[in-house]
Image (tube, rainbow, N blue to C red; front, top):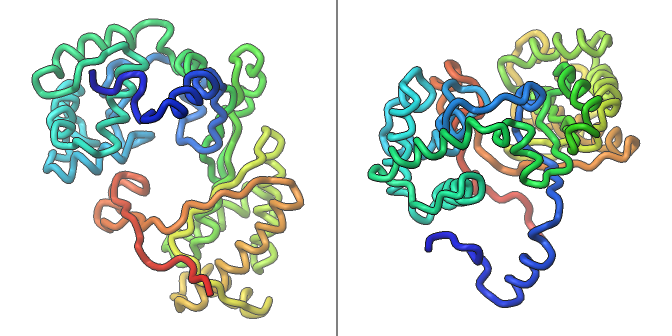
Length: 333
């Protein structure tokens, strides 16, 4: 049997630790990309394509999208308006070629754990699996909240921008006892650090608006972000998350930081050193803010993001165009 109950458990000790201890323990998920609005509305997925791939390019699994593109699947059947069944068939055909890829194992673990389907997904078995999975997805036990409860999740942290409205987190906080789990916002201020991006000045305008702090100097950026930290904290946030595509630490004076920020707000180009100076200073400032609030800080290190500029303009970030960066992160002396 493929992926039996001892999958990845290759020793007796591993089997004992998992089956007698870990298996029944609750899940505390400190980083996910679930949509709090979808959790609150508690709807069922219409079909397995919607659950796995989605019909649009919001909250989809861009790991699957990347795999499909690598196998030449037309975009119409990935993030386009293609028929959901045709999308599923296209994905099944790709999965046949993905032995050894974690996506292959993840998909079959999900089929087994959620749907009690132990059949390997292929082009031949796809029609049968489509019907069987969709029948299950229509059951009340497959609503968003039920899926979370059934996996014994006690708390999960979503990924949220400092300028986001946490309305649905507020509603879910009221329902915590009824739901049986917590949905906590996660503070991800990447756009405030990415001073070299073309949308930076527009983003700072939005940050200024939601924080109520006029941003002209470097300290204003820090104060505005701290204001949002306080807002997030109201809804249980104790965790932040930073994507560090690269980390080049550079010292800077207050005067230099104000000048760098001024140039960026007027959409003037910055040198790589100026970008590093700003990012270094803001990161250090935020570390101090997080420490004062007793928050935990997470890093997403060294991913190369949005490598296809044409598609990025059309589809935005996190759509399946990232890669691993193999530059040196740190050198031990």
